[in-house]
Image (cartoon, rainbow, N blue to C red; front, top):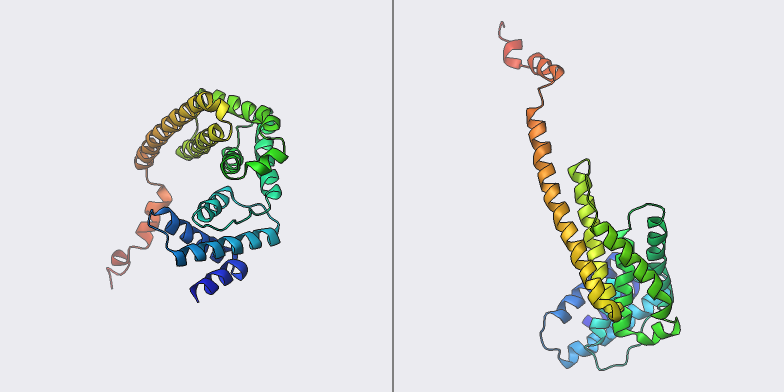
Length: 250
C-alpha cells in the first residue's frame, strides 16, 4: 500500500509533491540507519518511478536531485539505470558557458549557473562516468573549467566597494555559490584539485569579507535612519488626528 502510494505520487503527483517525496526519501537514506529488505524494495520502486518520470518529461534534472537519486539507488541491490542525462548536462553546461562568455564582457560570473554545472559534473563523474566518456569528458571541458576558475580567482582577489547592505549581501551569496562550484569542480577534475581547492579558499575568504561589510553597512544604514529628522508632514498629520485635542472643547 505504501509502495503503491509513493509510486503514484512520484509518477503522477504535482511537481511539488514529487520533489517533497524525493527529498523525504533522501533524508531517510542519509540518516545512517540500516536498510531492511522491505525498505530496500521500496527504494528500488522509488528510483524506477523517478527515472520514468524524468525520462517522460524530457527536461533537465536538478543536479542535487540527481545526486539524491544516485544516493538512493546505491542502497538497493537492483541494477537501476540512470535517467536520460543529455538534457541535464547540456542545460547546466550552457549556463556555465554563458556565465564565462558574459564575464569576458565585464559581467560578474553567474555563481548559480557555474555552481549547477559544477555539481552536475561532479555528480556524473562519481556515478555515471560511462556517459561522460561518450561526450569526451573531461578533455573537451577542461578549457571551460580552467577559464571559469581563473576568472573566479580574479574576482575573489578583487576589492569591492558597494553602495548598500543589499549589494553586499547579494555579492556574498554569489561568492558562496562560486566557492561551492570550485569545490565541486575539484572533484569533477581531480587533476586540478589542489589548485582549485586554493581558489575555493580564496572565494570563501571573499565571501566572509563581504558578509562582514554587509553587517557593517547594515549598522550604518540603521544609524542614518535613526538620525533622520521627522518629516514635517508626518508631525502635522499626527496633530490633525489627535482625537483628544479635536474633542477637548465638547
